[in-house]
Amino acid sequence: MIYAKQKDAPAYRGIHPSLDLALERITPEFLASVGSERVDIVDGVYATRFTYETVPAEESFFEAHKKYLDIHIMVEGREGVEIAPPEALAEFDRVEANDFYAYRGEGDYKLILSPGDFLVVFPGDAHRIKMQLDGPKTVSKVVFKVKIYD
Image (cartoon, rainbow, N blue to C red; front, side, top):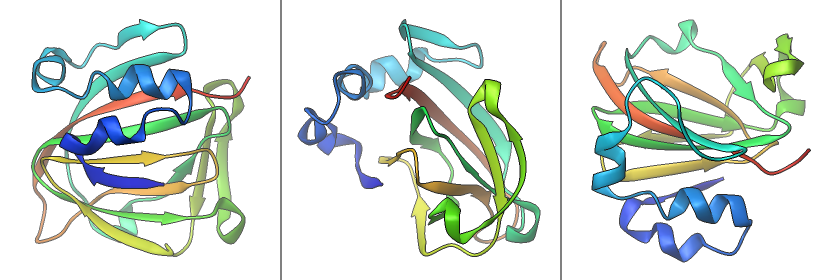
């Protein structure tokens, strides 16, 4: 997991070439250009904007991936996020074709994702998003999906 400010994104280059391609696009211009339709950057790297209402923690769940990492970039609003290792959680759903694994349980790390922040969750970082802080709020964020394993 990496939790940092958008302005510091270049400092994390060099971890994986595909991650570098996504980090280079954490700019106001690129983020403003991303809509609800998937924007392909290269094979295995794409971005999509999501806009939704935050929900109470008990209505959210953890998800994890085995092939992709996610970069969550908050554009508007704030949400609570929790991180935990999948092996500490109870799996209740999976769609292997979509690299999606769903879990319930308690998070080890809690953070707030606000405009100007970004969060990188690697395979092995189950993440619970969309959590309300002070009641339901609308948030908008760009999520990059970056394939790092075949």
